[in-house]
Length: 292
Image 1: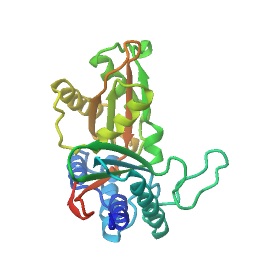
Image 2: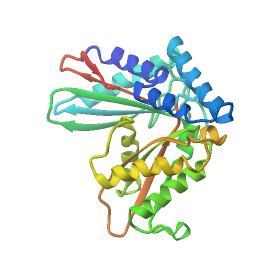
Image 3: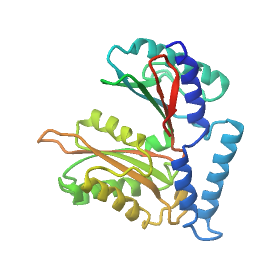
Image 4: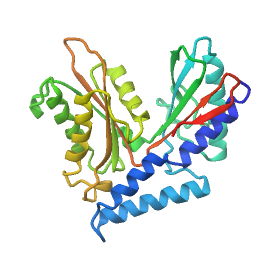
């Protein structure tokens, strides 16, 4: 696909600078719930101004442009090595152009690579399907919200959380309480019930690819997603921890099978700068659809 590199560069630019409409609409709606003249309303107004200015100037929404996470669904025969090469080149150019902050450091030496390239950066998750189109999605996930992600092993005696959905509810709300304002709230949660420690976290981040208005096809999880948002917003934590009615903007929950001996609940916290975008390519490499 000869146009892959410039298309990926544009994907990075849009993801960094422009929040999807579903996220913006949710933020605007949530802002109306805050008390006039409150710190919470002030924080939500600043967030909205930031969103508008970033899009207008095509500048990063946040100084922390975050971990670079690609999720690719492609047909059989797709050249994953060529995609990885194009993605790495696009990331390096995006960094040079200022779409991305120089944000990748060697974990042993602390040295910044200067181009966002290195082991694990960018992270690329491939999934094969039997169609003909290539579906590429990108999440830029900041360090502040990544720091307040959590993983619980049920039962959790401290929280009186058993191996059931009520126990899952308790640990998710505990994660929100522990995060307070440190994750640049209001936040969005991606959650995985089950799996092992590694696949659970990956699946929790894949939940963040869903749109804000997406309804879980599993009724029990759909009800839990709604309950978590309502319950979290009664905690009074509010935007940036200033207090108020908007602690969470959304919660998306998936489930994986698990071992009988294990019951993990993996929670990925996303900040208000919910940076995700994606496109669909045809077999000639042309963008035929933007996904958000």
